[in-house]
Amino acid sequence: VKLHFHGFLPSGFERHPRVEHVQMNSDYRAFLRNLDECAWDIGLAPLGDNLFNNCKTNNKFREYSACYIPGVYSQSPVYTNWVVHGETGISVTQTEDSWYEGIKQLIVNPALRDKIRLQAGALARQHFSIQACADNWLNSLLHV
Image (cartoon, rainbow, N blue to C red):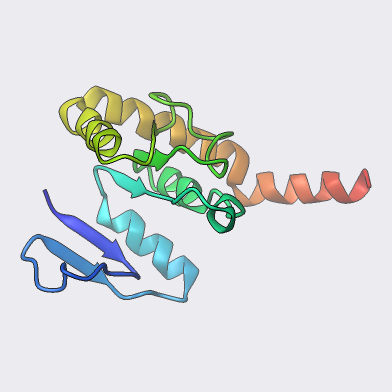
């Protein structure tokens, strides 16, 4: 197992031999290109249960799905409409055991990883492509 951190690096991991840290890149296209090139087997998207996090967007789901990275996500209002457990991601509670089991599921079951990778990727392209977003904006503006 190797851990990759993009942007924030938790303390204690600075010199670990199985940890790779990529500095934050403010060029979003370059960030997505780099994320895609990483070809991660599993992406993690933990979010604490608080008002600030519950007001965030499903950005990690969109990024991972667009790059065909199967993800393990916190059970959060942020992901509720997008992460269908075992279909478009793995949804876990904020406990160590739940995270362990969610990650383990994807490690030991490559068929599940592939299923989630493909279904989440298709969902991202259907709902979050430039054309889909432009169509949504246009529809919203015309039906105000």
